[in-house]
Length: 221
Image (cartoon, rainbow, N blue to C red; front, top):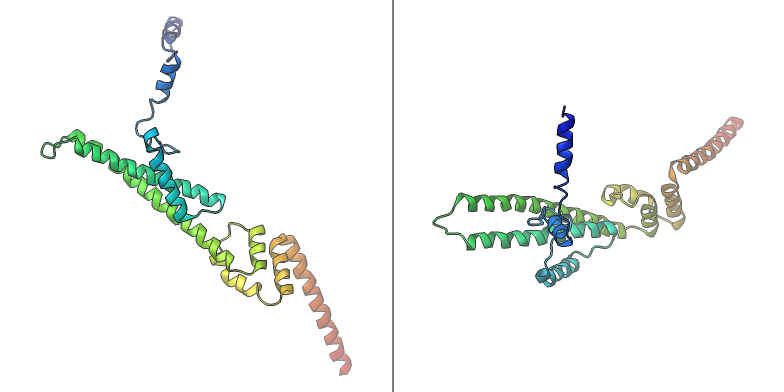
């Protein structure tokens, strides 16, 4: 446990370690943790790179066509990973350009290995995001192929449901006349309690019919 004298000395020393005071020093200090920006949540874009980044974003938007908020979130991951992979390529090229291939030092190899690790992580993240967007858009396209009643039911009750897994049941229930499909939609969107009441009413009606038929059969005998 620190003595009273040590505590007093530490407090006095702390007055000399208050960090940067000027606005310029605070700005520089805020950037101390930034080295390459490859792990940042938002891509690092210098003033010179703005045009190239905007062109990349426009092309990726044209090729992926995200529609929903979820698709846009995944798109931004694809954009960030793609941009950072490009930056890694420029970093690696710069390292190779300034090194002697005959006298390749351990420091140069360590720097390249450092970026190679980031490259692997970014490639995995990119492929994962591409697969997620592909799955979202496949499910969206499959939903659009359903009947209007099925689209209404899924959009209202289970917007994140995998239509591909529900397809057999959708084809079974959302077919036939509009009245039948409307009943299926009501059961789908009204929740378990309404579905139970709906089922119970049909069961009661069936029991009444069955009971009448049995009485008629008995009276005929």
